[in-house]
Image 1 (spheres, rainbow, N blue to C red):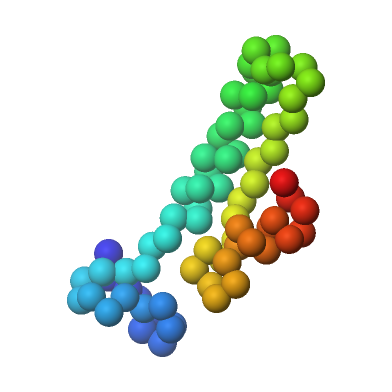
Image 2 (image 1 turned 120 degrees about the vertical axis):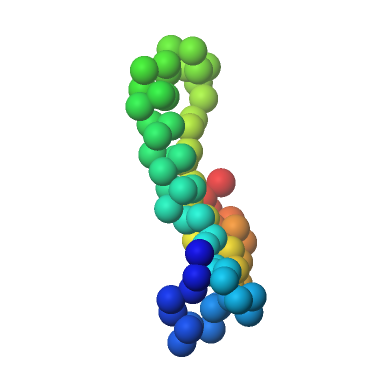
Length: 74
């Protein structure tokens, strides 16, 4: 794919390439798990907790995982 946002700081430095980090794909995976879980929840231990987490900003100077841990997500 060709980057069509040349003004952005994360524009690919490689001709014919683009920054496609996959956030939409990751969110689709999380959301597609929900109906699977709801249809099969009797197979999960009854005393377990399922958390679906989406990590923001893994590329930034302060990474998403640490922000989420600091916020108490786990």
